[in-house]
Length: 403
Image 1 (cartoon, rainbow, N blue to C red):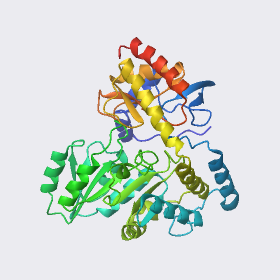
Image 2: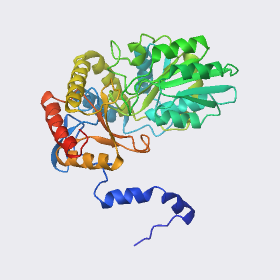
Image 3: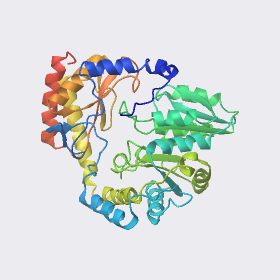
Image 4: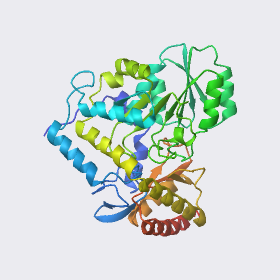
């Protein structure tokens, strides 16, 4: 039997800052991460041989089990095989990749678009490439997604952070940044841990006043925010004012990957400068085919967007009536504030044992001692599933003294 090579002590010293907490959670049967589901993401899913109501899934429109999408994916596998085995600039492009980029540009009403293998990489590619010298400044909301944080860290730009949705602070920073040749304000359209949205109307007004560009991460808004579901840019009627739009395929579009939509020059520049595009394997054609079909169905079956909002309103109303703190959420992301990490993990475990799955958000996903249960509502849920989940959550919340 082969023995595993061990890392030197220098690495173990760093591990010891993190691993004891994980080991303690496992020893106390409170490790609530990576539950292995045995079935699709639906209103009710399978876990450990039993049904659980799925209250944390980014399958917002319920498309992950759509038969037409599954059929499109199977057809693409038969035609193109399992993958391209290459990067986009070389052998990693098929006609499907081009069709999807054209569809994204049409959808977001931009001149052009590019796709990459993950939503995370979309943000990293744009931010690390477009602002990459001392003449650039990136101005970022303090609650932006970690992919934005990491993309900024990889750039050579000056970084300035404004407190969440604080427009006075944002204007102050812009006033103090006028010497920079390139100024980029980047925000989440919908904030993934709090469920609130960016003050995009005020942000765009300030950007125009101080000659800055605006980039919006529409990952958690595409498909259901705005009159036709094109995100917060459409919600605020500012699609022609947002220079860069980012989106993922792994949420409403039920696939994997991500995209940047912008003017033609920006996209051409990114395709030939962004390492995450140049040196990264392209999305498998089958995935691309599924996303293309998802766009088609998302635009055709508008009842899914309506059902999502009906479910969101029903669930949030039920939580508030029970006495839970849903923070400032106005989206299908509805956090339930708990505070204490230990209480949070106990509740997550108890809820799962009783047939309700909700992901826990603790440090470092959220600030220390500001933990929350993070629910994401989908169109897949029935009214009966929502009401049953609320009943169980009420019982568990009272048991742990949260309500």
